[in-house]
Length: 103
Image (cartoon, rainbow, N blue to C red):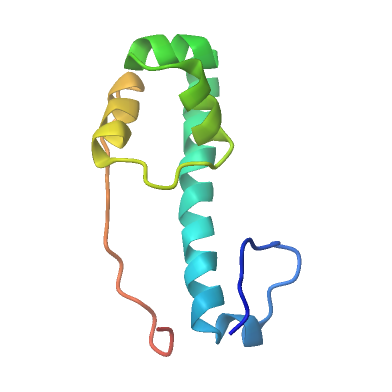
C-alpha cells in the first residue's frame, strides 16, 4: 500500500475517495482546516492579534500560530474549550452519521 503523507486539494477524484487510507487522511485534513479557519475568522472578527489571543488564553503566541496554520493534530478538548471561552463562544462538537456508501 502506498504511503500518503499529505493531500493537495487541487485534484481529488472519486476514485481517490475509494481508498480508505486516502479518505481518512482527507477527513482529518478537513477537520483541521475547519478548526484553523474558525480560529482565524473569530480572532479577526474580535480584532485581536495572535499575541492578544494567547494572553486571553494563558498560552503562547506560537501555539496560536500553529493552530492557525492547521497544525492542530492532537489538540485537546480542553484547549478547544479555552479557545471558545476566549471568543465568548460555546463549543459544539458533533458526531455526524456517515453518508450511505461512504466508509
